Image 1 (cartoon, one colour):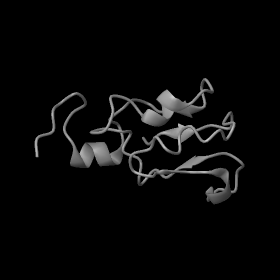
Image 2: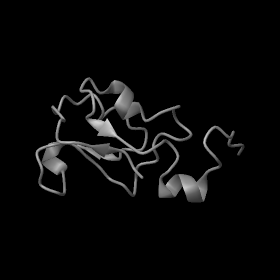
Image 3: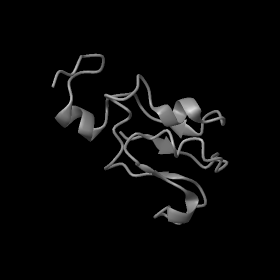
Image 4: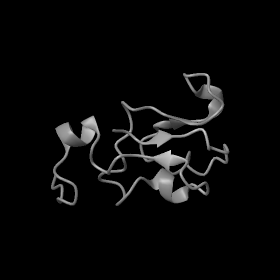
Length: 90
């Protein structure tokens, strides 16, 4: 599962610069038309290989705004990376 931004989003921009893969867009570019920020599920890597937890959630000042099941559960993680906590050696 990719990270999801809920409707408690206050559009503060804190998450936008933190995403290492540019998966988050502001409410102007939200394809659903909602007035909140949006995470493209096909781009989100849950920060695996970049941070210990999704950086957007760490940067967000609004409790419960950014949610996910667990780090490492996304399709990208399952297909392209090792287990959570496992070192990736190139």
